[in-house]
Amino acid sequence: MARSKSILTEARQIERAVTLIQLGARLQVLESETDLSYERLLRLYKEVAGKSPSKGQLPFSTDWFMTWQPNIHASLFLNTHEYLNKVAALDEIDTVIKAYQLYLEQMQSQGLEPLLSVTRAWRLVKFVDNGMLTMTKCRKCGGHFVTHPHEIARHYVCGLCNPPARAGKGKPAVQRSLDNHDAEPAGDLRTGMGLHLCPRGGAFVPAAGGH
Amino acid sequence: MNSEQILAEIREANLSYLMLAQSLIRTDRDQALFRLGVNEDTAALIGTLTPAQMMKIATTNTLLCRFRMDDDVVWNLITNHGKGAANDGMSRLHASILMAGRHQEAA
Image (cartoon, rainbow over all chains, first blue to last red; front, side):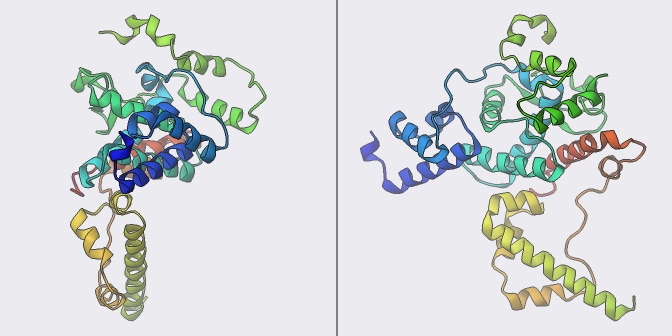
């Protein structure tokens, strides 16, 4: 199969794969977005990243995108992605890469930790493509935010216009944990986040979705 | 500032803008469309300007670039009206989301 491919196409795919690996993508993303064989991708990954790719399943739940801070980051990325989608004629995966790079820049310029990984960003676009997530306009600020489909647009208020009570306290906790990676930050904030980040957490509480 | 100074400063700003725009477009055209907020035709045009052309275009009594936001919502978020410093980061993020969502002006 690979033999019939043009060398130029292959070169572009390798370049794409290298960019994705540098951005921290999981191997599954590379497998899905290039025609390169698993063995070659694995070798490429080790060469570029200097280590073996992490194993295990990809995060599969849409719930992560609904929690407060991740939702803000995901919305920023998705707005950028949609912008590029509208103004530039790019292949799907290139739009993800370029939008993600712009997202990283914005995080860097504002001194924030990028909560959204490239794998999650890629996943988010897939979720939107197959209708599991969408963007809804906030009736207060007019911005577009990641939501479940069928959100009642007339009543929707985004997480930034209407932050949860604990919202202000979450951020310092994240920054503190960045300052000393190995130390366990005291307090209940971390555990609160941990609950949200648990990939299976949401799957067992469908009632929270309110459908 | 007398009018001579004004014209000189506007030319400087225009020239810096055009040169930056051109190098952004040449580095990555698609990302430049997002950064500059211009459409593809304009970007293609700026990308091919010669230095002499840039000098000519820059020499005028108006600025070539203008603000991307002209509504209170974004302005208030950026200038952080009526909010404490604790919310500053979130306000800027909020403004970024709103501004990134505005592609109708570019397209």
